[in-house]
Amino acid sequence: MIFLLVGCSDDVIEVHENVNLDLATDTLQVLDILDKAIKSGNQPNEKDQNVLDTYLAKYRPLYEDDYLENINNDIFIFTESGITSLNQNITLDSGKENMEALKISITNYIKNGDTITSSYAIVNDDDGFQISETSEIERDEFIKVYNILINGVNENLKAINANDIKAPEKDGELYWQNIHQSDVHIEVKYDKKGSIHGYHMAITEDFDSKIIYALAMNEALELDTDIFIEALEEVIHIQDGLKTIEYDINNYNVSMLDSRELGFFIFNFDKTGHLN
Image (tube, rainbow, N blue to C red; front, side, top):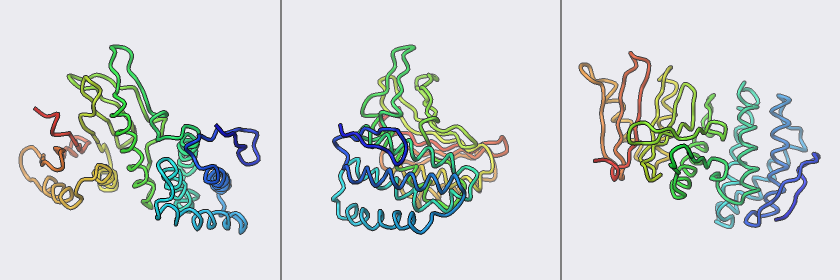
């Protein structure tokens, strides 16, 4: 481990051996600038803005040319998203909350030298159920990509952070893990062996403005957006009977249930290998 002082504070950050020390140092400086700007509600001064511009000019080419590897890629991507969304977060009521979540994620990356698995790994000890290591990695990769997509949208959208993650709870034959609880609910579903069965989203209000969450979920799973939108339009325009539709794509069974008259719209992305 290498120990690194953070800005002007007395806190010490342990920089993992897998993390580039220059990148870590520069990233922590950028986080201090972003945090100060959002808390004050003011744009960075000329000196601080130059630091932000220099960071992007220095590390963007390294990222594009694949010189940054593994966790260093993640650190840059998340820090870049913080810089590009600065104006948005300064004006939003949730800006401080978004910044705090970003700082926690990036600091964990720097200390742990891996993805967010160590932050989100939760075991339900009540009945011996445990999420498999492979599923932890898959889930955390989904969260990472989903957050990048959400943070890239210029709307007041909430990304997933560590405080959202709950312990899995058994329901029938599956274990459901709530990873986002608001007017948009997101759960990861696991089988008894701790393997991911699928992903679930329920939008409980203001559907038209929240559809971006479902689109981000679909894209984070690397599924075709055009097919998803076509199915969504079809289910919305069903006139009689149960307003539901499903289709198989890339080893997923995607299903939609439009029950807005009851206050919710549901999306399921279940792995076809788990379906009987």
